[in-house]
Image (cartoon, rainbow, N blue to C red; front, side):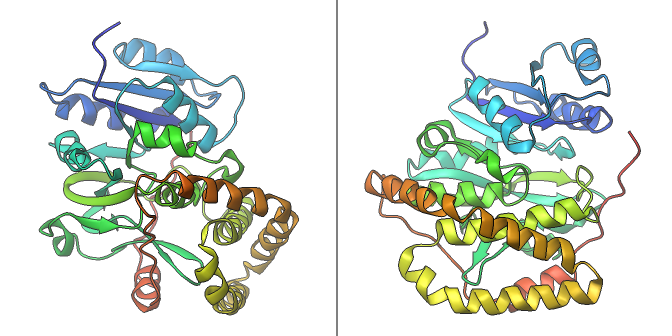
Length: 338
């Protein structure tokens, strides 16, 4: 066994052999000589020969295999459990790291109250545009990517600042903080699981820093098909569970009616697109999961009682900028056949 790494880079993957080559090559190209890291690929029961290819092409990469397909959250948690680093970076298989990414991503953790770091994530097909400069959350119940679709030049020269949370495509986490709050909730499957984790880290008193010198290229939705009705249903369900499980009670009472109005607007918008049925099915699924909300809220109250600092939530009120970013978002990457 080699010396304990400072950072463990965890890459969940399902039938992603065609994506992993570029991702792992970029890590090898920019791997720092002075900072020990380990790379862990978690294979979610792939059928595309990922394991054999990885053992042959990247013998230095640790490999964890799930015997059955369990989804992104379970894969990420398996990688986190296998990791040995003080810091864990969760990296999508459709990403590419840039020079200095580890050094910049680790630097904010000198502050013990920092539980996560958000890199500047750029659109791989057009790096002049931003995918994410951290996650943000509006009181009406809308999670969104900060800066999504904006010019990267607007964000690249900014100093590091505090942001609600880090996008799960490339987030850095303090391993101790992950152990305290419990990692990703597997009931989310995929989508908004990173926002839920960001909330729990905040309930535990941790903060998140956006570090623009840490840069990642990301293919938009090359892993998931947003036209898939089952994904649309899951996103609608997860958004509702996220809202009712995580907002502090005072803000929840203030936001409940605006949230209901916002949900109706979303339903109408999706109706114009002919996509209202999976949206409504997702809301029904969330209602059926109502019995989980009480235990979820108790967990967060327990985290607050042992928080390292009084929780600070950094929630947004205005939606206008988020709406403009959403409507002007970059086109998704084509999904190659596998």
